[in-house]
Image 1 (cartoon, rainbow, N blue to C red):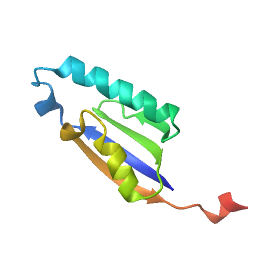
Image 2 (tube, one colour; image 1 turned 135 degrees about the vertical axis):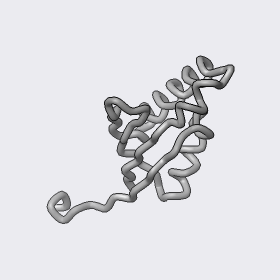
Image 3 (cartoon, rainbow, N blue to C red; image 1 turned 90 degrees about the horizontal axis):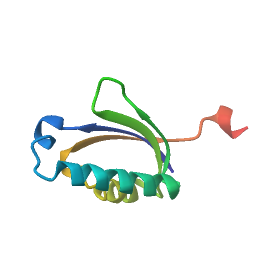
Length: 92
């Protein structure tokens, strides 16, 4: 199943964290692993924002939420999730 996921950072709270550099490095490492594993299918930055939008793949919403919870920055992230279904134009 595929999901459209918009992730926005709470930068005002996050930027004061004493271990910010380590958290960001860990977030990038986990993100790369999710891309390599085919979980994040595509991802785009949203210019001018501390946000991204991507196509994520998971068995269901429960699995997707567990994957999002693996992100080291998760306590400072807001995730908007929309389940996607195949359109009949794609199926033919």
